[in-house]
Image 1 (cartoon, helix red, strand yellow):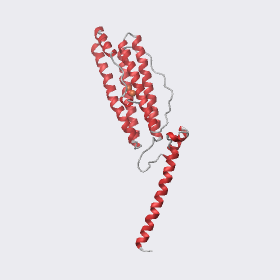
Image 2 (cartoon, protein in one colour):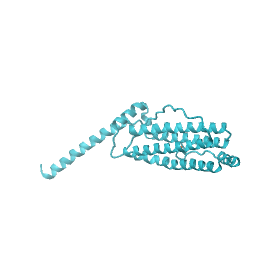
Image 3 (cartoon, protein in one colour):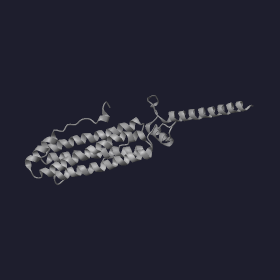
Image 4 (spheres, protein in one colour):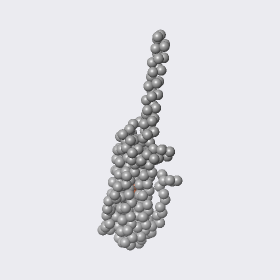
Length: 234
Ligand code: FEO
């Protein structure tokens, strides 16, 4: 064979190998990813298979890896625990003559459930597996209103560090879709901490002034719930 013919022959061989590799990978992916038409495959079987594969196909990340999936599931649990904590704080406020604070914490309770639901929806949208664990017991007693709010701020600071850790895991795993989704939570935490700090500042300013406390309770009681934006239409 001449040089030109040999070159063409090598190119043909390379094309054939590439086609074969690509169709094998496509078949493997088709088996691993349940579609609505192929919904008979059990979710856990597909999830296990996806974890084993865990590779990028033609440079496109298509699935949650196990480490990210576990971290998001842990965060779902943390958000549900937060909801439970705020419901407990609401009960304490109602029982201790601060119904406006009680109402404010009821809205916190609803918002935390939204946070859990955003993560829940996200895991599903990435064909991952949601695993809901038990929600631990929460505190039920505080000495005074200021303690409740200081506990709230400390808790939100803890949640901020959890979200930051989750973001770091997503970046380590080169899971940019998860990192992008978490940006909403990062911004939300700034607001959560600022709001709790603002109420603490007001309480410290009011001290034992009954009228001041009455007015603050009234103001907080006017808070209404609005659904978190990532849940719109879902
Ligand atoms: Fe979901 Fe208040 O953090």
